[in-house]
Image (cartoon, rainbow, N blue to C red; front, side):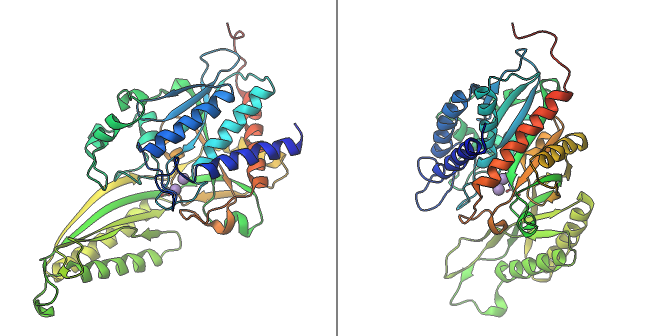
Length: 424
Ligand code: HGY
Ligand code: MN
Ligand code: MN
């Protein structure tokens, strides 16, 4: 295949991400938002089903509403290399976070089909329905289901409109078997490969188009509620207030200070809401999220212990109530050293000096690592911008990523034991 052909194919993968940036693949026309089990999610699965079929894959929707394309190897039913990423987005998100990895996976299988190649293993492409947690409180519910970590209590989670996950599943356009049926077993899976935009500045700063991930950061997500006494904004003297608003402000400044003391720890308060949320009412409660990440669980937990201690002291001093709920606890996830070495060889073979990178962003690969060995490829994105409509990627970089992915597949095929006999 000529370079021009490859470029054209990747232009199509990027164009598919762009098409997914608008209705019906986005819930809104003025910004990209595609949340789990919405009509936009269902519409994206329909389009992906067609593209996976064109690429020679059999396609199914599993019990967690993941779309799975399968391209058989020489021997049908062989263990699979899974290439995956997520198809949901954050609110007002970018077009390539998640989607590009799915489109490049389809692109790789299309290349295998077009060249009539069958491998000693199958290749599956998975579009995970929920990685961001942009609809329900906890995230990565779909890769958890595939990794056999489905938590049935998640069915009671409610979205911002009060819809439970159970009801959203029932209302989904695709009839869904039980989410627990999405679980795969280690013997079915050879490895998991995820291609994803870097969502950070390193590759661009070093003028590199692609890089290889070594470890994905440990992360914890908490829901904090500081309770006070609701009151009239005009008649309640300042000295008589039990206002959780300023307490939350103090807490958020403490989070910034504590996380700022260590290079490797990051802390974010992405969601803040006063209850009842009226301008002329002293809030009865303020709820906010905390997302803390670090290269190790120990560093993450050390920062969080100090944060929780300070928030408790703030609430006590102000005579307020406090509740802190754990929403997500993901330990750091190292990629498999053997697969990472293969990916580095594949990156080198396309003429790029392999750059090993740590991932501050979470990915489905960290959950899939509980099922099988994983490898991750990063793709440069402009300004490192992500979770933002300004997210952008060069087609040439995506084309290099696709070539490195196919090179990785070739290396894996060379090392994987040849099948006993050709497909029956
Ligand atoms: O939060 C993350 O790191 C990912 O975008 N879900
Ligand atoms: Mn994201
Ligand atoms: Mn992502």
